[in-house]
Image (cartoon, rainbow, N blue to C red; front, top):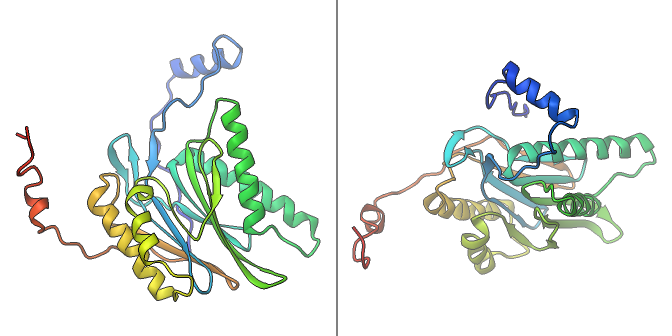
Amino acid sequence: MEEQKWDQPMGGFNAASRSQMAEAAAGGEESQRTLYPYVTGTSVIALKYKDGVIMACDTGASYGSTLRYKSVERIKAVGKHSLIGGSGEFSDFQEILRYLDELTLSDHMWDDGNSLGPKEIHSYLTRVMYNRRNKFDPLWNALVLGGVKMGPKGAEKYLGMVNMIGTHFEENHIATGFGNHLAIPILRAEWSEDMTFEEAVKLVEKCLLVLLYRDRSSINKFQVAKITTEGATIYPPYSLKTFWGFSHFENPAQGAVGSW
């Protein structure tokens, strides 16, 4: 599938801004840190199923509170055995993808018949995120890393996450962002280890639909990806059927104490 190009500029530079950047580079100003994320993506949902790992998210990116970009791909393949999904600041996610490109290229150049699996890449990401956090210059992302690699016991599925301060864990199902509050209860109640791919898709779609109704940063354009022993597949974006006729949607403040 063709890669999404991030070619929409956030603003131009004039001569004054160039001179200010030159002064900063020459030591005229203190170095600046990313204090607040600007272009951000919302939740990523991922879970293990019978044959591998499935991951899903929407394709929206918000400029502040404005849903500015509608076709941003936040799930990418990493090497032969892994998928990564990112929430948070999109430019920082692009930087992480550059790190991973360098890592996988270096690994490939060894030409030793082995390749990095999802567990190794997740471990690498935890060190990168914690290192940047200790420099007080964090990468403003929550990352989900899933994959499948053949091991001594056959195909070994792996799913883990790491956030912007380096906190990390491995789990059977993961949700970042608002999904950590709204999707995790659904996953805990309905997930099973022997789910088929079709059942896994229905479960992540249910989570995405709840997030669409409740998360203002979500849009109705979703992308699903899977990874098995045969490799990664990232499917084209699509929309879900919605229903906005619920009585609580029509008058959400009805009966609320002190409401207008």
